[in-house]
Length: 50
Image (cartoon, rainbow, N blue to C red; front, side, top):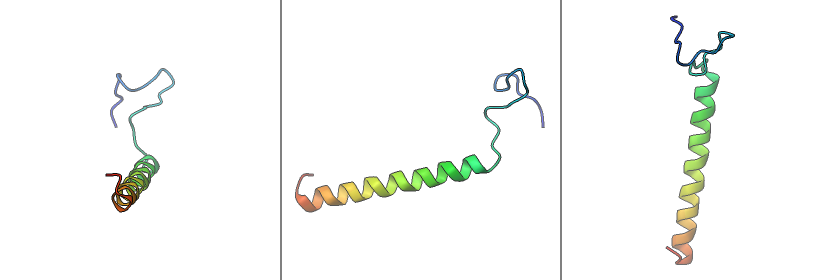
């Protein structure tokens, strides 16, 4: 793997490299946020606020 000078700090840590855990965490957060939005919109429509 090449070292990207724009995203790697002096210690060699690459901020943009994904290990797989970050991708799963982002997917989980996206699903949770989507469910909250859908539940909120459904509730607003049910109550006549939307």
